[in-house]
Image 1 (tube, rainbow, N blue to C red):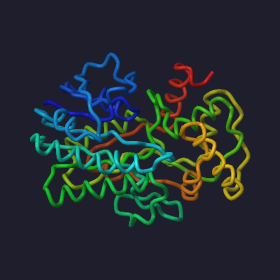
Image 2 (tube, rainbow, N blue to C red):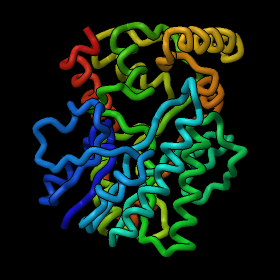
Image 3 (tube, one colour):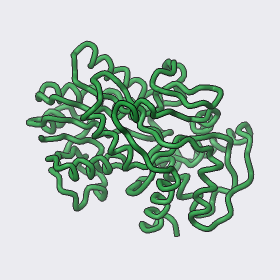
Length: 330
């Protein structure tokens, strides 16, 4: 089987790549011409150059492939030009799946996100059927992923494309080279630079478990269905305490109210623009998102895909050890 994979140079995609190779599949990786390829170095795969915003390159990449895993996304909570998020995450996704369909790909996996799902105000875990609308989406990243998933559903419904949707929660672990927004929190906490926190929560899962869930969705998932690939619900305080224990530091004990932080978030974004657009540590949308605990249930994936996960503490430990080994934490 010839399998096309997008996003292999990124965090989650690199884990999916390794799972596919270990499974004995012939993998073709779509990589941008000038992208960072550290995550695919030494892994047996075919590399073709292209971009989600270049439809002709997508047609060439999909040629002669039987399967597609579309993992790539522009994962930024803040961007100087938000239109980039919509071009890549929504328009690029549609262009890729159409190119794959024209090439005769017979089975496709779309990596969405729990960002597109409803969140219950009482803090109990949401699932794939929790009501949600676009107006519930906070920030351009969430809206771009919501638009992308809605477009994928339309392709399934109207064009009969054989797509299974997976919704990862918050993957952590090795090879977070960028790092992701959550990875940055772990780095700062491990370095002792997070003395305080806000009252929020995340669903933490090992990136390798999410990657394995992708292959399970390919084998066992039903076209048109979506499956949450999550792990364990933890408050931010619990996450920071676990990281502190791993590195031998005292956990932060100061809980900050959100309202006084918004002026600092606006200032951080202003400075980021002046410095060329690097994503600031504190963002307005990030603060708005933190008002709700982003807890999710993976019961459907466990029941129907036979999805399994390890404890969140193992994921945090693997993440910290990788960051330390690669110089992110001195």
